[in-house]
Image (tube, rainbow, N blue to C red; front, side):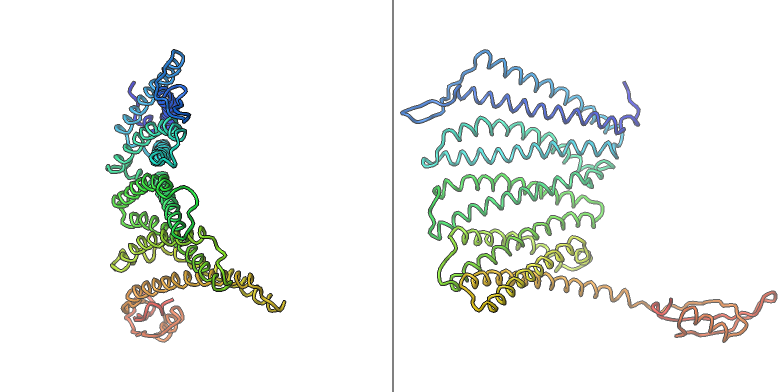
Length: 498
């Protein structure tokens, strides 16, 4: 039946359609994973482990008996039925949006369903794909080859990759197509809080996962260079971190490009700039924390050798601090240099960024973190030093603790000084831009005051303005039916007018 436009854009109808879409999509995902897992399991053989010369190997002997096939047919039937219901309701929702401009609660429910399914599919795809690539890498080396690990990755992880990819693409591609369009719904999509939440969550989580994996890989390499060769060999051990970097790095790049694309499509230049600033300053805050921790730790470890006379920190700890610097410094530098180039370019965009709440929040939070570290670590140094003096002795272990606390305080001071200097530079730049606005010309204002005399008119106006600077009083000809009046012409600076 034909539905009136009001019903097509109703929130209740949108709730029904999107609830059915969400449930059926999850049913397709669950039964699809079960079907693929059973298919791979059957292709490998049941059981899929055999033995050759006493060593466990994958049988690669397909076995599909009657009950097993019946179970798989039931799973595929659920996928087909749920997929048909999902397709019908997706087409119904698309027809609604072609006829009426869906907004408000109806559009919010659709976005909630789309981005929830998109995030779920992306998580399943990236996590399991990284696991499969890591297992295949390790299987290529005899010293880390594990048949059980490879079989488990094929049976379980591989079964999640294809459904996760389908769920992600089926939700993400229509959303991207809508964002690039025109109209009320496209504008609402670009400005949606749900979309921004997904974009920034994926960027931060993917970036953090890639950086942690890079830190693990670099830390293992540095640890071996420092003489600690324990654990698995270097090349096999690099498999999982390298796979994580590749998969999550690709996810980070893709969603970062989506943020830039959204910012470029914003009708308001200020709104687009805010989207970029949120990303850049969030990364700067995380990487600055990593750099500060790494610098304090590495300087403390190096100096403790001279304080105590021996090296009391294991190579793994030293490798950790070096890794934090190797990962944190390039990450912070790349993003901060991009910020600095925008500021150095000048113009209205640079002035707007100096005044932006995101920039001020980053600078003040970083300065606060630095000064808080300085105060806490500095007070601890003073307490331990004075306590040792009062007790009459300072042991080597106490000097070692004081050294580490002093380094922490110095790093906190450096972070505070760097960001506070930028705060002062921003304030000076903003003040210089505000000077021409404050230096306004004098304005001649004519005020008509009804008074018996010129002196009384001047006194009344001076009392009202609380100033008589620049006043010039002239008499006016009184109208026959009115009392005498005085016309007072005042010329004054704006700050003298109250």
